[in-house]
Image 1 (tube, helix red, strand yellow):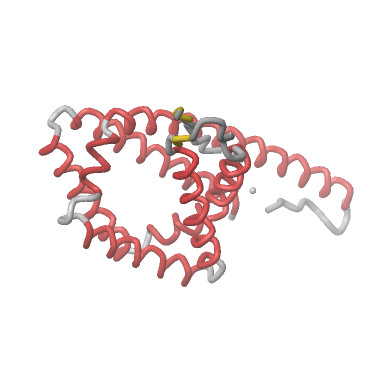
Image 2 (cartoon, rainbow, N blue to C red):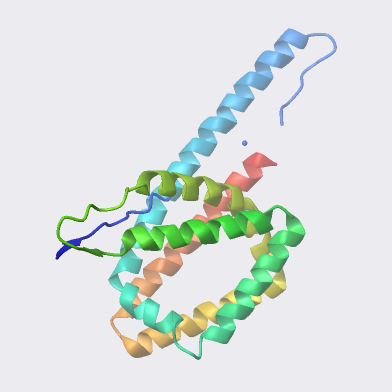
Length: 208
């Protein structure tokens, strides 16, 4: 028997101003094009910054991934997780009914990512299954971009925000009890997450 390992790196991967439109439609159109290009360029720059911050968050998270997994699976955390995710889903669907389908698709893709991330034990002569990781990563990234503005709006709901804060604080406290060395990584994750939230707000403002 031989072990076939596959690892995924998540790459986790915009109105116009009218001037004298009635008198100078050509000028107005040119001005709009320039402004749209400026907005698009700004959005691209913000998205690049966001990806960099995501990489920083992932690096800090990797330092404490085992501890975080244990904490999230702890029975004391389960009710908080279930309450938060139920509230978040409900609010997202209230904001955008299509989110129900998108969230189900995200769950399916997440399961596929787990499969691709799990080492496989193959019998002698057995060929590994087709590796479609790039397609899965691309689909998940596109879905994440679609869901992000809806999730951001949902997170502004006081009840959802309170549920998330309760879960996050409990998870972090439990992680530090399990592994005191995790405190530094948790603090970096918090700072990076706050910076991502700030960028998301800028990106959302460009879309308004």
